[in-house]
Image (tube, rainbow, N blue to C red; front, side):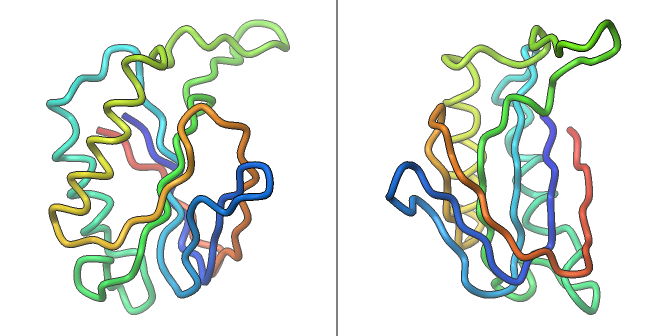
Length: 141
């Protein structure tokens, strides 16, 4: 499991004309990719790392401040460009594997008390964000 996490002052995701998730205060934008070999055993660790990462201002976390997270699935995080110019997607989990794991991470975050907004799995999404810093981190489990 891999997440690109950006500290933001606001962020939103739109599908067509519908805003499916938005945060309008400082928090984290999480682009979450699922590897083909990932399973549910990695969910608690990813949720904990995302919720407790001390990357907000003053080394705070979403857990300590109650800041929201916007979680957006992104299979392209496992694109492999080592050969040629066209990425290979073989390392990314198939949708039938990835979708339940993305949902499980979101559910685990909510069980921890996190405020979580989401995109729509498999949809063409427009993601907007105002980066704070900028401060962007790669988290893997």
